[in-house]
Length: 361
Ligand code: SAH
Image (cartoon, rainbow, N blue to C red; front, side, top):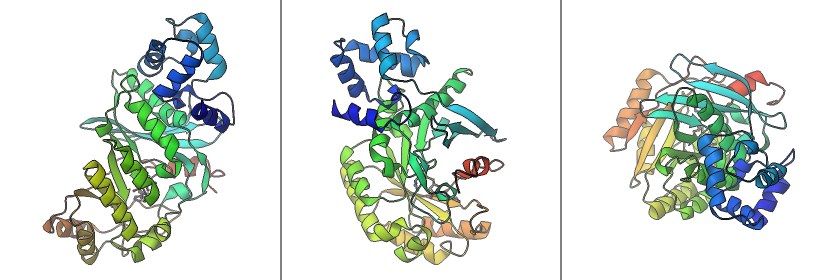
């Protein structure tokens, strides 16, 4: 079983996490052990609905099978290093992985339910000049099971209050498309009826614009929400903010997004951070409206968070509203991102950077 072998080999510390296995992968493994098909459903139920933390607790499996599972896999538990709670209910968790690296996961309370923002990489190699996640470069990819475990840790907290994780955004530390295979496994596991059963329309993936992966993602034909961190109306400005634009400039990016829309018919979200004096004037809004013309899309304006390590300044309220008005007048769907967790280290990577300075240097 090739896929499983790769996953096993990728594991540097301890046994591979069973949370990394897609339904069909677990099914093949069980088949190899001579187990009937319905075992997969039973095990997924224990893992994702009952949320047990040991194979021993899977009482409708034979002792022998529980033993075999325990010899082959681990059930990942993330250690909570610390958490910060905002007055608006946002909770930011700092979790430690098996090799000591730390990652952030955020729980946000919306009127439509509990949303969890997961981390896909330890650090990031894309070097966006405004982002705290990229400060120490990329340490390693986060495995599918470790992304899944972030959701489960928060779900276990919510279980105490009888609540559930309603939606997922892959917008934490890292570039999800730079960890594409693990990302896809994660999406399939949480979306599976017998997994966490989180509907595709309640899952959002955000990319900085790794164009070849956008084509791959389009071909998957998933009903998942798709967001692109655009942040500039042209390549000249975008390359200054995001080095990834030098590899895949705005024109190529837009081409891939049009392909995505042709394939999936899904609306695309553009994230657009307003950086004082860089990309936040009415002329930029006009150029942006031109750029997205003809696409079924939505622009989410993000007033920039001050990152002490970076020099960007916030756009004034007046300029934010002028930008929004210009887009609206040109027929573009636009919202200004509601800020959450402003009293905690809310920007991606800030809590990790502050807690573990040696890791992000
Ligand atoms: N790497 C992916 C996922 C991260 S999502 C991506 O780039 O889309 C996190 C979002 O927050 C991205 O849109 C990112 O560009 C934005 N962001 C990062 N640092 C920020 C800051 N200091 N102020 C405002 N937005 C920021």
